[in-house]
Image (tube, rainbow, N blue to C red; front, side):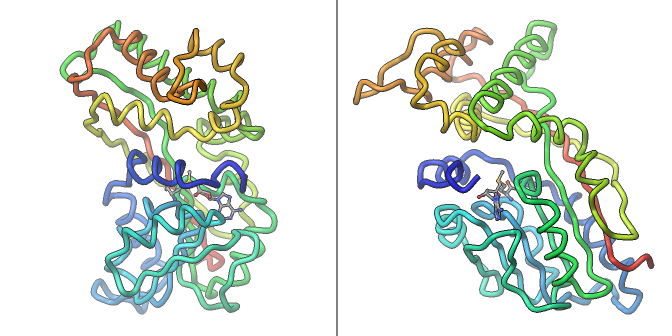
Length: 295
Ligand SMILES: C[S@@+](CC[C@H](N)C(=O)[O-])C[C@H]1O[C@@H](n2cnc3c(N)ncnc32)[C@H](O)[C@@H]1O
């Protein structure tokens, strides 16, 4: 993993194009946490939350009102640099660190969250760390999203539906070819973290209802989102494989395969739309919550 998320370019793409989460996700999590704290009322704040695999803060800021301190941890220095740059809160800090060795005291954390990240971790080591750092009534929450529909705004018809499948397949193909763990990760995400759920070693664990959310996106944002797919970073030097997916390479100024231009061309071909078209992306976010206390 470390190599895949290394680099300012990927952190930059993440910050520009990766979605954040709707309030409903955070509200469900806070409700669950409160249900394990009969002493807490609606106005009380909790001491400490840790967002593991925080990226450049896509999953962190929404929790700001509910905690005295929040720490985002990520293995990638570049992601942390971008997370720090966007930070507007004095009580949120960002640290470079590994999910498998978290820099927190035993029994000190109220909530551990993982947004689109747990599928990268060594699960046994991560769950051991979570068990160590959580307070006895602390909670763990895992969430991520799948892109289920993507279509030109005001034009959801059969052709768009086929185009959605083609775009989803393009994303999967980049991931499957370029990311050594791509197949497992894709399977887990589409299965709602079935295996990961089984491995959570806590007496209390549950799934919340999936939250669907619609994002309006420009042509540039869609291409940027596809470009941020992690798998392509391994493919950049494997020109023949890229040409299998995208057809003849479009050279950039250095004469290398220009992936962004190739994505733009492919997206344009798939929809036969111009760059001014607005698109709609539907994300399904699933959420798992667990606690060491069975209250
Ligand atoms: C898909 S991004 C998720 C970013 C953000 N949390 C979100 O919800 O979009 C996954 C992040 O997990 C981080 N990561 C992967 N393996 C890790 C590990 N073992 N320890 C800490 N962070 C890790 C990567 O560097 C990357 O920033």
